[in-house]
Length: 359
Figure 1 (tube, helix red, strand yellow):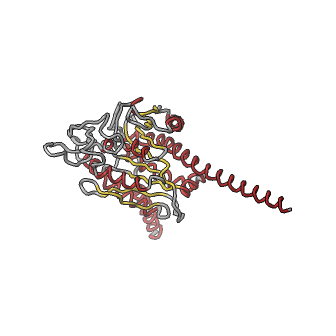
Figure 2: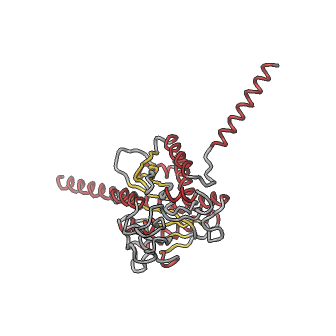
Figure 3: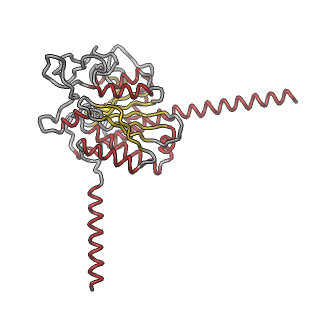
């Protein structure tokens, strides 16, 4: 009797422990404040130490660390790369939620999917869950700050307002269209190109490796759009046709998941002209596939997207991002294999001709 009671108690404790562990698992379908995201990054790096490392690559205005997850197989060789950043605008909470989901999905996929294994071998993924750390933390302060957009640097002398729009601060036709020089404006572009430490961190990190990056994806909300370069109406990307073709196919992949329509085009064509965006800067650096994702919704909830839409939003956006990334990978590495095969064939033919001549 005592043994059976003891055994029952052990079983009960085990069940309670399992339930506790299950509750403690990270919830990808709710919004997380910055401390929880930092803790999640540490846990991901610990759980996947064979693939993931944390890279600290800058400091915010308020001296907080800007970090990314570098994800890929360590081959000991220089690799091509994919960039993704989320949370450049503080109030767009669905964007950091997507970056976290994206990391989870590619790590899960790596376990069973030969294609993801191939891509992890050939490329590294650099994912910044929250770029605008100060602004994001400020947006969590209370209801009055929930819709904060910019970073938290003070305005110039004589201005009592705070913050620069980081996506108007990059050195890409800076200050020409779709910006404001009023430091209180939500689209204040800063005192000069790359005046903000957060923009500087990205420009330095990506700029030093610009020849390695095949793809630059920056995640925003809202509007259900895929934006291609450039934001200035007087400039057209040299590979505009390909960007549109790949973007439209990505939008098709998105629609197949939950039926949502994403519009593809340049910002002047389908949204509004702008300058100084990170997407345009990346394309000007020579990175071929640069896109801005504007996630759900179409304006019903706007920046306050309910948590019950996190999962479907992430599921569909993942398929769109994966299509673009896969295209960039296959174009690079399929052509490399074809070139190597052609070179080998040329060498074999040359050897055959030489042997025939000697005979």
